Length: 604
Image 1 (cartoon, helix red, strand yellow):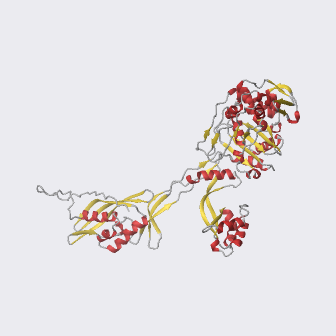
Image 2: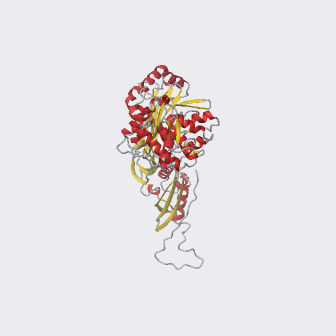
Image 3: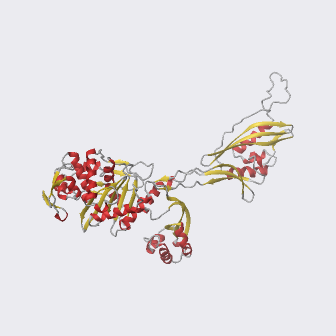
């Protein structure tokens, strides 16, 4: 225990009648060495040093004083005390000596107050006439003081429109102790059956193996309160199974981006507790709180906001859920980089967070990059005539169009609108080995984005020294791979004119590693017109009735089928949709259209 220095502050009371003092005599403002103030200070000093025996011996009721003084230290959980006199009033053989206490309590809490000691003189010696007010002026004779802590309300996590996503709540940790049951197999079988609706991965065998190899209770599951209440009675009937309550952040809607919200929770859970409040109360002999002597309210942490938009996230989730194949969609606001939706269906969930980090060949959606590179290098512009035969031989590779359709010589804009593989393979073959790599990075594909709360991988576009690889890369096959997150960034780049910095948790900075050169305005201007014509008169006409949509379809051939892609933007919503082995790109357009149909009118 730290012993505090004791401040000695003395205040003398001028005598009512002025005295003529002899030269060399003691000043009237200097306390008499045998007056009440030194005796009072001796008591205070001993109390401050937690020398209870000495302090109580300075009073006329040592037993009562010792109990009260010791209780004050213990029940306040005090770390130190500074105590000093502040004033002296003498009236014959009695006196009042003011005191000032400064308690130092746990967690840097400081409590200061003033009071008075009642002093008496017996046989010429001053001492403290004990009363509980010597500890605090409002403390009753049979009362003690106690420190109380008030937990702050946990901060909430809300989405873009302000509704709560995570709120403070209670969860129940379910455990099983093999030592507390005579038949662990029976308990484990019953427990797995009860928990199956909440977590199908829990098995009786897994519980038995873990519980029998754990020294003590093995944690099996964590249940939301409403889930726990529905099975509490069944759990209580299982030998060896226990449940404990814990404070936690719980989701308001378990269907709302559950994996992503879980990642957000892990990121912010240590920062939502705020600062606890505290108080000192008086407690009677029965342990009942009577009064509050001091109170410092808790300071809640500010709420956390994430960029997800509930309307867009729900619409995107419903759209991908309608597909039997793995399906996913990412929506980003070009103006700010806010990630508005990250949706993937249960089939995709089996492979992890693939919407933001899974890599797939982009097919013809990569023609956005190839066309941009052609415009930037001066190789071709939207109106430049390019060949679009049904099949073209470049090096050792024979490249066909879909069903080998042929357009003859057409503008690059028309080749883009009709998704002519042969035209863009020919353009790519005439580029430098790193042209597509550089162009992709200008559209946000290739750099590493450290988005707090979201695992991401934008894609990989390696330089192509070999002609065949460069040719295949030009129409999104070859060695090019991207994520839906990366292609949503590419679409956002066209919409904005520069790549936005993606972000999920408001106030958390995203860091970018890798080359990210600025985009040429001419690339953006040329691509916008071509992407609009894809919707008005090209391969994405299915979505033409959903407002002013700009886009590019793609079908990427893979073993066992082909991936269906649709990438684009409408207003301040840039999107990328992928249906894994979904066949025709029209299927990805249909998923995107369904998302837009579910949004409120003019929701951009």
